[in-house]
Length: 119
Image (tube, rainbow, N blue to C red; front, side, top):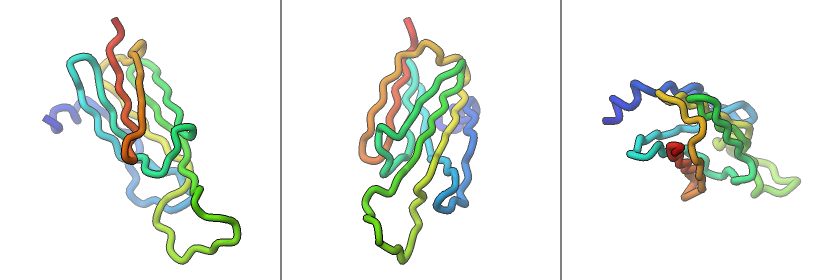
């Protein structure tokens, strides 16, 4: 099933070579439901207030910033593998999602977006 759904989606920005301070592209899963879509985006450590969603036609654009809020001034790092910077994810759906009822929540490091078809 995933293979057939993925044929309909264009995932823009899937870089695996990311260094701190550069734009990064979170992983996303997309599910079609009888009344719309569910999108899960891997955003561990990102605050809800640092995320923006935009819908235009059949495109969902997600952007924001992951900030390191746990380290105080004067701390020097020994190893840094987590990317703290701006991110974006653009998903093109097979049909328009304009007018969809949008709900979103953070759950265990995932941003879960529900798009219900307009009536």
